[in-house]
Length: 183
Image 1 (cartoon, rainbow, N blue to C red):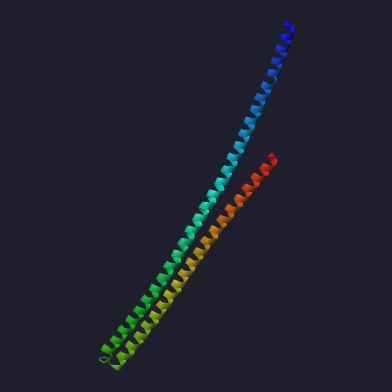
Image 2: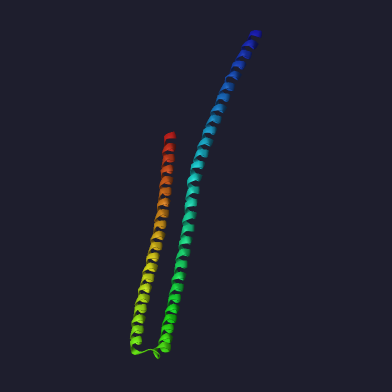
């Protein structure tokens, strides 16, 4: 009977010992698998958040640049209108002054002086016309340069956004390939 009890006791010890390492091995494998999955989620989340934040930053910069561009266009328009009004007022004053001068001094001059004065006035008028034309050309050149700068800024912003989108798509494609290789 003691032999049977010893044999039964040994069988129960062996049968109890076999599941214990198997359970520990299964638990260890489960822990390792959970750690790998958590690591993959962390890497994926980091990769997702970085391009999105860069893209969001680029979108914000683009929006700020568009706002700035619209403000510049508005400022240019206001300045152009102000210059036009000022130019008209100045021309009216110059004409009124010349008329007044002619009326005051016209009666006192001799015909020779009148001719010299007329020539001088024509010369002044020509110079004023040249100065006005120079001013118009300079204003047009300035407007064109500003338009070119605005256009270049828009092109640079579009290029930066395209690069960001390209980098984002490359990163996503690499992650997909890496996931495919893992499975």
